[in-house]
Image (cartoon, rainbow, N blue to C red; front, top):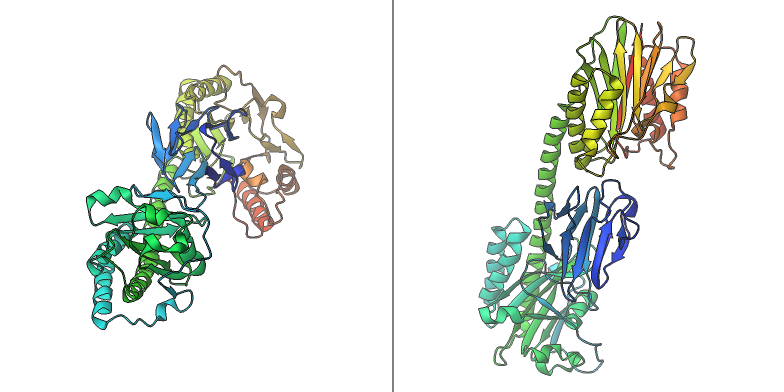
Amino acid sequence: MAYLKAQNGSLAGQRFELDEGESVLGRSPECSIHVEDFAVSRQHAKVHNNGVEFFIEDLKSRNKTYLNDVMLGEGQHQLRNGDRLSICDVIFNFYQEFSSGLSDSLDGSHISVLFDGAETSTGTIMSKLDVGSGHGQIQLTASPEVKLSALLEITQALGRALSLGDVLPSVLDALFKVFMQADRAFIGLLDESGILVPRWSKARREDAAETIRISRTIVNRVIELKEAILSADAASDQQFDASQSIADFKIRSMMCVPLFGIGGEVLGVLQVDTLERNKQFTDGDLEVLVSVATQAGIALDNARLHDDALAQQAIQKDLELAQQVQLGFLPSSGPEIEHYTFFDYYRAANHIGGDYYDYLELKNGTLAVIVADVVGHGVAAALLMSKVAAETKFCLATEPNASAAINQLNNNLSRLGLDRFVTFLLAVLNPETDEVTVVNAGHMAPIHRRADGTIELVGEDLANIPLGIMEDVEYESFTFTLQPGDSITMYTDGLNEAANPDGELFTMEAIEELVRAHQEPAQQRGERILESITTFMQGEQPDDDMCLVIFDRD
């Protein structure tokens, strides 16, 4: 059985089983996996199943499909257990389960899963060790020379390995030096879903590499009972006769031991086996392997922490750089216009975001004040935001009429075919006449507060659909005059949809009441609004970007 598990968004936690043949992901309700996101194409990507393996194919989507953060090219690309599939802002993980609870390989080592039957209650295991408690303190009876040799080999190998990709082959390389009779070995690690994923395999002879098989009966017993198992002649061990899995592949001797993390949790298993009857493992070998597995488990834990730290550092560095780039698109300071004061605030939910504001001095001496919100947040929204910023400057510079400029901006964005939309609010201030012209593309209406304390939502009835949805939309403008003491408040929905621990939203009405209730300069009003929202959230982190712009006439 294979499935996709959503990691974020409205689908977070949901599991979508992949049918035989094909499964389509997209915005259309007819898709096998329906993803309700404007950025997702109607038919975005397709998962193919040939009966054994699974492949992902991008269906020429507008925003592309990413496999393990790499954009897919044309054709089909194989999916492996644990792969990360990104469709716009929606992230899935691919998992392949088998009745044995054992997954296919991640490292391309040609390890195949063997399906065996139920265990029998008869038969014997030649030797076993209970390592479920005090595994790090187990007393070994192997000869000191053998034990020392094993530990030195594994310690030296692991001492040179920092990342998981280095630790795994180092462990197996050391095992083949310690156990001269071993023909094959593999390491399997449990993923976050409890599925055992073969991560690395090794064969002493090349002709044996493709014949490696894994018995679920043995592996499950090792994991569940936390036992180290030795079968001196696995082909005749009736404990595993129901499956015939061992006999079929002529494994004459096998050892399988659990790998423990620093905290005592089972990380996976380590198994070595032989193909010839005259190559037998002993009790002493099993004890040595347990000791090796103890060292290996600690090294694996440390390697995972090291890899996670490096990955987090890389992500953090990229985000910091992206944040710097994005902030470069935003004004470094407010305009200096006689009789007018300005306040602005911007905060991305995740380092970078899709909210945008700007002040643009136009050729006719007017000032364009812009507040916009790209649907979604994160990297994709930030990239589109930068495009919106560039296109806005071009359209307003080449078209003096506000409505005509926004019409052109919408056409330019719609032609990109990005399946994302932008709510956009434009207020053009003429300092000579004190007139303000507003054009609204699907955004919250600006709040006009008069000196007498009354408020009005400017041009609310004239708001049209957001930018980027369709071409040739006619956006209308609304013009009014700012009197002394009047102010304009513009914001994005990250403010009114800020949530407290109970899931309650701050609301637009709350913002309007704050604007209406206090006669104060732009700076103080902005700080009051932000302080009120922060108090309301009670320490909760914002789920969306926040942007607030206020300007007053003295």
